[in-house]
Image (cartoon, rainbow, N blue to C red; front, side, top):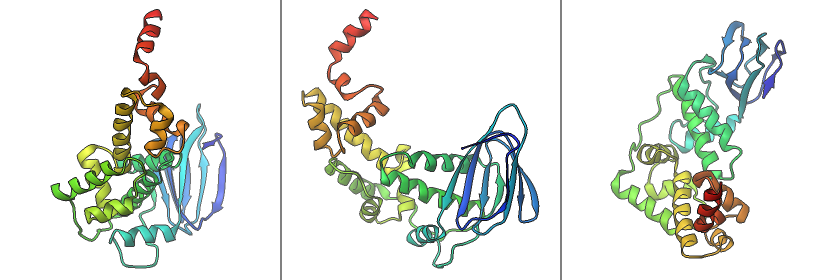
Length: 261
């Protein structure tokens, strides 16, 4: 979103948690009687029913930001599913302006995943945002299994490998690993640098490349590996490889084209 310099929002409130990552510009905020300033690379957090107002500063550039609205009931469900809390009432989190690079990253990850086609990636990013908001407020999560362990991690990976023709469910993977969804996500990020669904996508694309090299048609590969259609397959392939499945399957033609400039 973009706000014109000098634009303002009068005092108002929301039923949801409102979390915004400020990309550029500046914002002067009134929050429950306090005056705050949000600069670029900061995150603003408002609890449900918090009264707020804001004015965007005058500068050469417009203020740009992304805002997420988190349903309190969904927040509670995530907390209960991951054994962080037993309450049925949405908790108050620390609100205001925060210069936290980790929280900033998590907000952007969720915003970007909303535009992807993977429900598991979106769910993983939502869980991480909930965890970050609780941790940011000093909430102490109940201790749980911190690691999948080699045996259970192998079991999860074998399940992924055996199901390359479908998208992964965090629910199913967490049951196989016998850990919460949150710990499953953290363990995969620690081991592979990406959440489970993205790792599974890498496995599917490795198999796709093998099949394309063997001469299978891109459409057949797409359908056999559970992609919605050839366009979905091509977009996922190109995002990782930098070129389309058809281009990958015809390396000689690519070399000749490059040689001709």
